Amino acid sequence: MSSYNDFAEFYDGLNLDVSYPERARYILTLFEKYDRKPSLLLDLACGTGGFSIEFAKSGIEVIGVDSSAAMLSKAYDKAQKLGLNILFLCQKAEDLDLYGTVDGAVCCMDSVNHIIDYAELCRSFKKVALFLEKDRLFIFDVNTEYKHKEILSNNTFILENEDVFCAWQNQCSDNGVYVDMQLDFFKRTGQSSYERFTEYITERVYLHSELVNALNESGFLLLDVLEDMSFTKPGINSERNFYIAKRV
Image (cartoon, rainbow, N blue to C red):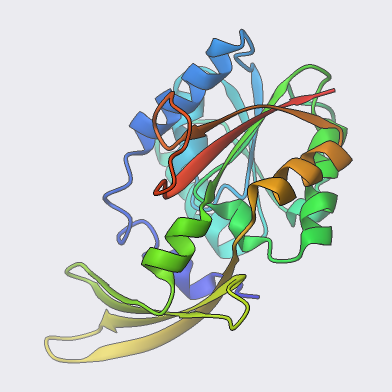
């Protein structure tokens, strides 16, 4: 499994097309739809803190958790520069250990797909349930089977900015369940010289039934599934879906 150490350095610069403010507002709207806006929110697999920062800006107390110390270092520095007091913890999802309960939890940007073992996914969901107050919401998104098979699988993407060039190559497993990603970063070190870094990441395709079962096994009730950034049911060509579950 990747530690995301090199990826952390380039993550924000290569994700400028992600509108964290817009996405954070959408997620908060989902909480408000069920009259469950949190005052203390767990941002699981928070990465470099893009969502944690936006939630904190809205007045919510945030705990950001990620397994990558490099990602968390970026997140902490960004929050400090903005004067935001966010608690960041370096933990794997399945080892989540908080000081008390939270009244809301999120896991954004297909981080669930990065948990490639179903048993580990269940352990992670159970940890969220352990620290989430009863009747409160856990909201997460996933890349769909359609996106994995029709867009990501066996495809190559190029990402670049003035500081780094990234060649992103994907390979689908024979059983169609996993997508292995190789990201080759070329960091500019001079006018015509580059330093190369490589990260290997795997995503898993989770069927809707698998996610429902994992939630049920972990103490959650699925309330709704919505297409990305919308309030409509997913279609067959949906690329990202949001799951809204209640702790029971």
